[in-house]
Image (cartoon, rainbow over all chains, first blue to last red; front, side, top):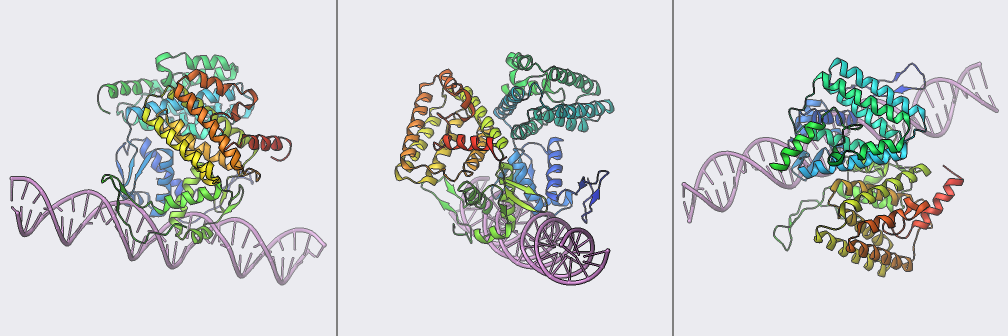
Length: 253
Length: 253
DNA sequence: GCCTGGACTATTGTCTACAGTAGCCAGGCA
DNA sequence: TGCCTGGCTACTGTAGACAATAGTCCAGGC
């Protein structure tokens, strides 16, 4: 997808101190794999064969294997010794785990981060929200997902708690993995725009700085606690997730 | 250290279903690296040079690099692009992060796991506590640390929440990393035995099944909230951590 | 007709080798 | 004396090749 950097090119940006180095193949490969999984090109349970991927990505096996180790720690991939790797298969219990832990991390972030101390962090949230809005206007589903992901991470980042944010990002990724289970998960542009509206309201609450109000909102959702749909649901897919959850409850594991 | 398996040997255990496979070099290397870091042989900020380690461990670079990727995701090691890796350097803020997040994960585990549903899980806690006690009796500091680590993981595992347990293990590891900052962190055998006693009381509380009582105990510690010393402090090193925290608060970053 | 054994293929686990980069040190120039 | 520059060394990033294993398919025997 991105052109493989045959040689390292040092690119000096507008600001002289900002030197942009091409990322290592491991990072590139990890990013591509994430996109393939989140994008639904690789579904939970699918085999992840190294040779095939090296050809697709145009790299050799060592960096790919390192990338797979990263993905494994992120929970997107499961390694079966001597049998290769598969995209993490999900059960209903997995979904439960992902949503509960994610919810809990959000609560903690609100407790630690609201009211906001560092206005600069708030600016970053605003900027990413605008990127979301732009993606929604253009109707680019993939871009919207990515922007939304980054917006949420930025919100969690208001806490200034890097480890919390890292754990949250992991859970977000796995939530996106859940979403791939439902093929009907495509939202139309209308939905995207509405979603941006919800996120804008969330940002308003945050700017208000009333921690308890936000926590109250979070706790207010009763049965849907771990599928809270106001400040954190990604891409307006809450209903989809709920539906899947319901379906899974009745039928398959 | 461990003999390198020149050939793969399938070992069939007493129970026929239990086939013991030799672990991959990546796992071996990751384990060894963890021990080197937790054991204080590699201190925060120390460079982690690949070539040196391959010689020490008797393996080649690819599996070692994969192991480093794992450790990186665990937060024990930080990769500096094109400059190698270092053991994660810790600031006061890092310690704050580690203890707060760990504490929060504990609270969640108690809320989800108490009262205990699956008695088998409780048995595992008991078994590991006995291992701890044995290590304390023999005064084996390293073994005690490892047993304690596993005991706590088992307690968190009462929740049946694998992702929660995984996140907790990560924080535990990083907490052990914090401990290496203080060279006086060696506890004598007396301390170890006392520590086992505290853990035994915790297990008693858990067996009692009174969730609120435990949560109350956890919240009861006021200033020391995130250094709670009853149910989760490892190895009786709370005081050491507090002292270090105090020292860091005044002086260095 | 079904089961068992063996060879084959696909794939993972590991190693060695090479390309390219960052840091260091000596030497030259202002 | 101080700074810059060139080359050297140590190290990381990546590639390709080999060794070993797990699964599969087919042939042969019961």
